[in-house]
Image 1: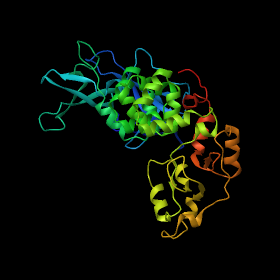
Image 2: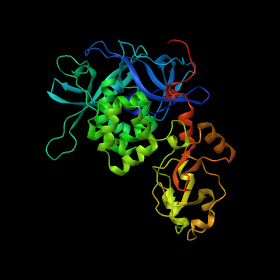
Image 3: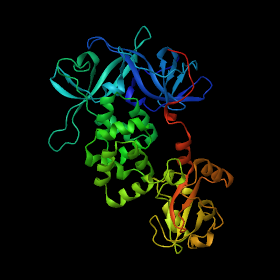
Image 4: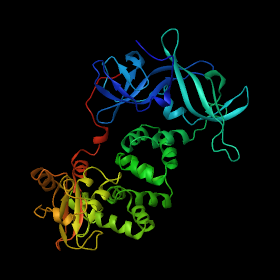
Length: 419
């Protein structure tokens, strides 16, 4: 390894970009793989788990890592693209050691692991060397005292003698700093029990964001392990189209029970989307695009599309309708393209910049018809109207791709050789 700091704290590695020798990014660090044989000897680092294009996780041996600095990791570029599969003798440092309950026998202090450091030994191997432990908070103190000790001075890291149970506090804190897609990828790679604990510790809104990015089997597994009230709350935080897709994967009796527990308005939107035939405009649309009345100003429109929770495709168009402005709306008048609105005075009316010539979609339009429509008119979103000319939703290009790609697209990538 050409250059590297003397000691690296592993929690800070997660999410760092991984580059090849010419400076092209090949992926992101997701975890570190160690071989733990005992608490007396420093475990050897075997390599990194790196997420490459297509959310595929591969194993990068430490012998392929040429440099680590504060913002990136460099490799030789000779990477094996076969999907990483954890062996029985391997431990994932982030997935299995972070948040583990441990004890420091010399001081009889107990706490949870919030980071672990690795360093290069004299033989050039990387080993786990220090453990950062945080005591529970006491009284009015929100955070307990922290200690950084040698690996050999901590018990509970191997889970023996009744110690070593694992919480989720510090991993959840790290996940909350990631984009939903990155957090979902991290959760997807965790052991099943750990994934359930982490999902339970996330707040409803964050869990909803992450669920929308997970494969369907993970969504179902996580939702089924939540209590019914919590599951209903999380579904309410999801976009109606994603919630409808997830509920459709549940057993009918479970789906019915959750819909009954949801707020009536939220449940009504989901039921409406579930009533459409699969892979049609109605089934894939969102019922919550940006909808404004004809008296709204350009300033009003721009304020609405600044909402950070909107996807770029949903923020590209404003849908102008007669009241009511909840779907199904009053008569649909047209769309206003944000690119056009940016050229208009903020005090002018959105109605003055309407594109009323844009063709709309019917809810029964097939997936091929939707794709052709978006391609023909160079759109990233399009309105969906019922037979009475009311807006009932909008189809975006990301909705379309979710339905056109293979079911397991989040896990697919090119094949490679075994490691």
